[in-house]
Amino acid sequence: MSVNPTVPEGPEEETPAASARPLARRDARTLASLDTVRKQTPELNDVRRRIIDLDPRLWINGWLLSTPDAFLRYERELTALDGALAGGSAVGDGTLSLRELSYQLFGDEKFLSPDSDGRKLLHLMGLSDALSTRPPVRLELLHHIPRHHRHMRIVVSENLDPWVNMRAALFLEGRKRLFGERVHGVVFGNGYIVDDPHKLPDLIDSLGAEETSVLYWGDLDRAGLAILDRLSVMAEGRFEVTPFVAAYRLMLKRAMRRFPDPLENEMTDQRDVPVRGLELLEPHLKERERDYLRAVLDAARLIPQEILTVHDL
Image (tube, rainbow, N blue to C red; front, side):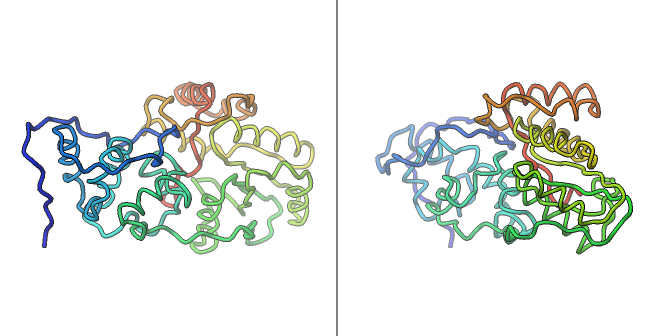
């Protein structure tokens, strides 16, 4: 039986279509201090009409209709959820990690993290069980290097989800190439691999290769490139470190398509972090890519690794 809440008639107002690509931002919006509003005014009734235009699963329990300010604060995200639910029973198809799905839908890989307002929003709308993501992986899975090679090429990943995707491609699918590049193994760097000067060199020594090349892949932000820079300095004279150019260029391509204005990418708190390591990547980029990346870094923005998923490898 369909449910159609009655909304008092009033003048219809045309509202511009919400963007299909919500801006990535981490601002001061919060669910705190939102009040339940049951009064009827032309303005509130117009908001409720817009809510009723969404998938009924977003408002059927009544919370969103009685809290119209939540719609006004999170209209972009709610519109993205509406699109994700269209024709399906869940948000996601189970192939993406939580962070990957979050970025795909909202342009913010942390919007759906367990303690976030995004997750609370789903709970308040009665959609806590609507997410379908890949099960998380335990952190002790450090590296996957299937066999010995005299000349070894390994990828070191800053973040976990991309590492899991690459490991699955090598181990489960028997792939020998990632992003078109010949690769022999993958290592999870956890973002802190340069804090221990022995961790990666000891692992490389244990491989028994005559020559090892490390392709580093991380977030495109000041902190991520700083790791690349420090890793390159740490490795000097022992093994070669280069950026995983094929992955970085695809990240830039996706970001430029999603956010033509580089300042629409996620904000970070890295204003005081110096820009280092860019000179290692820039020579491999086209002029448009260099200009876009420079604008992202100058504004302390972020293009996360999770912009690429298992489907891109």
